[in-house]
Image 1 (tube, rainbow, N blue to C red):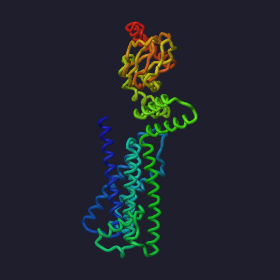
Image 2 (spheres, one colour; image 1 turned 60 degrees about the horizontal axis):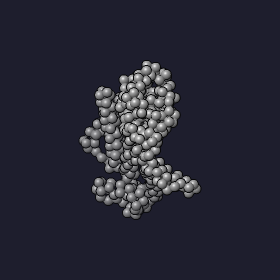
Image 3 (cartoon, rainbow, N blue to C red; image 1 turned 180 degrees about the vertical axis):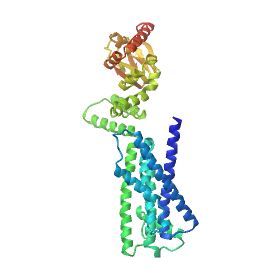
Image 4 (tube, rainbow, N blue to C red; image 1 turned 120 degrees about the vertical axis):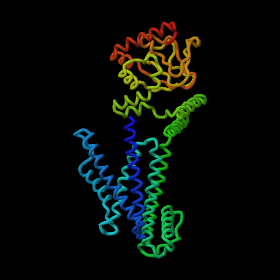
Amino acid sequence: MTSVFIKALLETGWHLVITCSAALVAVYLPLHLVFNLSGSEIIAWEAFFTLLFGADLIYQQASLRRFKEETLPHFRPVSNKYRGYWLAVDLLAAIPFSWIGASPFWPALRCLKLLRVAQTMHQWRQRVLKFSDLYKLVFFAFWLLLLSHWLACGWLVLAAERIPGDPLTRYLSAFHWVIETLTSVGFGEIVPVTNPQRLYSIFIMLAGVGVYGYVIGNVAGILAKRDPAKTQYFNNLEQLSAFVRYREIPPALQKKIRDYYAYIWKKRLGFDETTFLSGLPRGLASEASLHLKRGILDKIPLFKNVDSDFVEELALNLKPDVYTPGEFVFKEGRPARRMYLVIKGLLEVVKNDGTVINVLRDGDFFGEIALFTDQPRTAGVRAVTYCDLYVLDKDVFLYLLEQFPEIRTHMEEIARQRLERDEGLLP
């Protein structure tokens, strides 16, 4: 596990270095074309980027070869055309065109490395799902600033005679003009007077409209998806409000329903895990279910030291359920159809005359004895607080025991001992 983590860390570090280097190239090359930069530092940077992108070319080809070897022979997710495309991108970015006397515009081909940056950013968003929306905003800011830099360099070329000062002042003036034009917060400091300048200004203003639309749409989407439980909560309240307009519901019952919705929201249970698991293949669903329910299953003596396959099947078939204060999970004398595991909450075991004979808390389980004996419930169970439970249907429970007969004997013995210990009072 440690070697895998170190490998992933080194891979991420390498991609980060290439991303930063590609960004520096994308910033430096337009400035070089506009201001005709020269000097020993420029030559040193050219050599550095050549060596770095050359090393990345070798790294990318080695990674592709390793990926092909690790996948099944019949699985070819990367076509020859696609591989050739990325090879061309990496190769053109690694060639030192400025050293071979090429046109001043040929070195700009190194900006193709930004395609690798876009690919890396996409992979990062997929891997870090928890912060995917934050990454999306950060990456958008990166591309917007880079685009603004390119536009500012273009404006310097078109309106050079109208922007006085030293190179830094001229660049900052052009960058300021681009930002205020893109964001439509101001216009007029440098008025376009030639047709190319006017066309360039029109393009920037239209781009600004697109930027506005993208930002507003994505921010609204991020805010809507940031807390899906909260969104579900307000949807539930709207449905309740619409329902009471047409059907008479007592105020006390309305309050109970509102309190239930609030509890579901605060506990982030607005989306049933069953719905999430149902969209996964059985193997992944089993693994995810076991992870979600391992904590509660480990606390239950009934399921200790049993076959791991049985625990996986059990976890896959446990369904979440919620009970409100004062609500009966079941009453005395009712047929036994389920067993229950307490995730969180407090419940009372009560007789029909109101006598409380036991209290159930987090990690407790109940209802399994009646499934073994096939008898009605010997007592009722009532929620004292809001209770989160896992429920296992009788048919599934008995089916699992048929598949694992050695576990059935073990669990019947434990249930018999509990029944004798509690003198038949527990359900």
